[in-house]
Image (cartoon, rainbow, N blue to C red; front, side, top):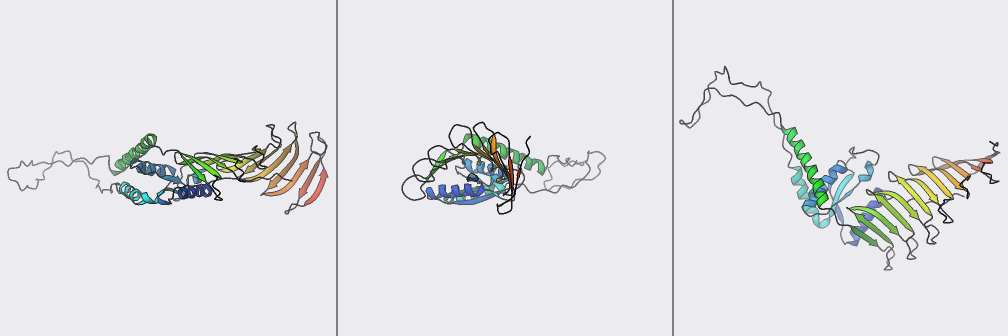
Amino acid sequence: MAARRSCVAPSRRCILRLRERVAARQGESMQIVYHAAHSADAQLVRGLLAQEGIQSFVFGGALEGGAGLLPVGGSVRVEVADEHVAEARAIIDEWQAAAVPAEEVEDEPADDGFNDTAVAKPDDDPNLYKPLHRSKPVPSRFGVPSLVLALVVGGVIGAVLTAAAKRPEPFTGRFDFDGDGKTDETVFYSNGLPERMETDRNRDGKIDQIVYYEDGLTSTIERDDDFDGYREGKGAYRHNQLSSYTMDYDGDGEPEYRDRALFDVVQVQEWQDKQGRVIKRMRYVGGRLVDDQLDRDGDGVMDIERRYDPIGEITTTRSLPRP
C-alpha cells in the first residue's frame, strides 16, 4: 500500500489565500493598482510607492520560475490596501506620464558656416546685431532614447536604494479557522513575502505541519501525519513543485519510505529496510501505477515483478532472475 502523501504547494493560489486571510485579519481588502511586465517592473513600482509611505505587495512572481524575466502577460501585479488605492494610482500615473514624447529630427547635413550666402531674416529689434552667416547646430546624438534609458536606469537604482533603506516591517498573520479562539495557522512574512507557515491541522494545540519559503515560493515542508508530535514526513520543492518526499516512521533519522516526483507528479516510490536496501519499488507513468518489484526474502535482491492495468489491478506476475 502506497504511503499517504499530501502536497502543500502555496504557489499563486495558496499565496492569494494567505493574502486574503491577512487582509481579513486587518479588516482591509486589497486592490490591484498596477499590472507589471515582469517581477523587476513590479519591484520598481513597489519602490516608488514605498517612497511615499505606501506599503504594497507583489503577487504572481511564481509564474517566472522557469522563464527568468520574460514577460508573463500582466500576471505579475502590485496590490495595496483599499485606503491607499487612489493615492497609489495617482503616483503610478504621474510616473508613467513622465515618458518624453519622441521628436522628429530631419536628417540634414551639418552646416560648417562657410560659403553660406543666405541672408538671415531681419529681427524686429533694429538695434540687435544680426550676422549675415548663421550656422545650424549639429543635431545631438543623445536623443530621446538615451533620455528614456537614463530615466529607467535612474528609476531602478532609486528603487533598489529605497528598498534597502525602507523595507516593509516583518509581519505575522494568525488565523482561527473554527472560531474557538485558538490559533490554527500562523504565517510569518518578511519583506512583504511569506517566510514560514505553521499549521495545527487537527486542532490539538500542537504544530503538525511547517512550510518554508524562499523568495515567496515553497522550499520545503515537514508533516506529522500520525499526530504523535514527531514530523516524520519531509518534502522538497523545485520551482514551487514537489520533487521528493520521505517518511521516517520510527524516528531514527533514516527514512523507510521515499518517492521522487516530476512536475509535482509521483514517478517512483520505494520502501527500504534498516540497512537502507530497497525492498519494494513501485513505478508510475502519467500518475498511474504500471509495475512494481519486491524483495520477499530480504536478501537485498528483487525477486518478483508485477504489472498493473490502468485501474491498478495486477495483470502478470513473474520471478526475476538472480543477478
